[in-house]
Amino acid sequence: MMLDAHPNISCGPETLFLTWLQVAEQNSWRRLVRFGITQEQWRAHVRELFTWVHEQYARRDGKTRWADKSPGYALMLDYVESLFPDCQVVHVIRDPRDVLDSWRRRWGVARARRVLQVWPQHVSAARSFGATRPPDRYTEIRYEELVRDPEGVMRGLLEWIGEPWDDAVMSFKQDELHSEDHERAIWLGRPDERPAPTTRRTPGRRRDAEAREVDQLHGNGVFSSSVGIGIRPVNLAYALMLRRTSGALMRELGYH
Image (spheres, one colour):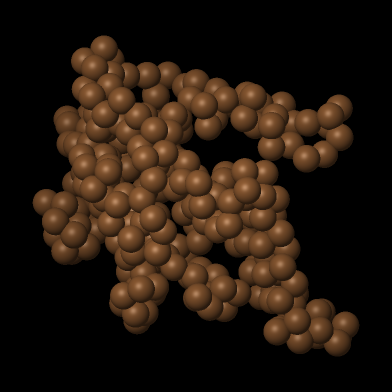
């Protein structure tokens, strides 16, 4: 959302569907070949479709660049790179204990267990990709540093991607970007076919008064109250399991 607030950059909702296009290629290639299609042709059309989707969102605000924030693409960056050889990858890494707590509060205990496998899998895959790319193609940002010093981190990131600083990055409002009006404004189909708004509030996302007071110090929708929230007794059993599945990676990243 901070990138999307920049006057030159569009970063819309998660697309997710690129994963399924890769699966279609992998699972159906023998069929596709029978149509006389080459892999280069197939991927050229995938690239065209994916670009077209993002450009619809970007052009609405007259923006010249776009980004995609789908977390699952961390597992398929080689494929993404085959479509966009000059892409720049921004890898945001967060303490897995806080990720686990977030999942537990949002989706429940059963689904939170997936973090034990998902976090090390995604983080390791993205870092392995970045280790073999030049410095101008891959960068890492710590979530904790971003919420502690959002302007400092964003200034560095914009410099890295070659965009000028703009104060709009720090004045975005989360509620505005996820409001019903915003969702309806970007619908390009017939008026009577507009999708219903998906915004909803969940009990797990409620914050107590003290946490909200701390969050308001930033004054721009960047919340800091969730940093370290995963280190508490209710998460102790999961924390121990995390140590077993991701202990070495956590130590490497400084999440002791």
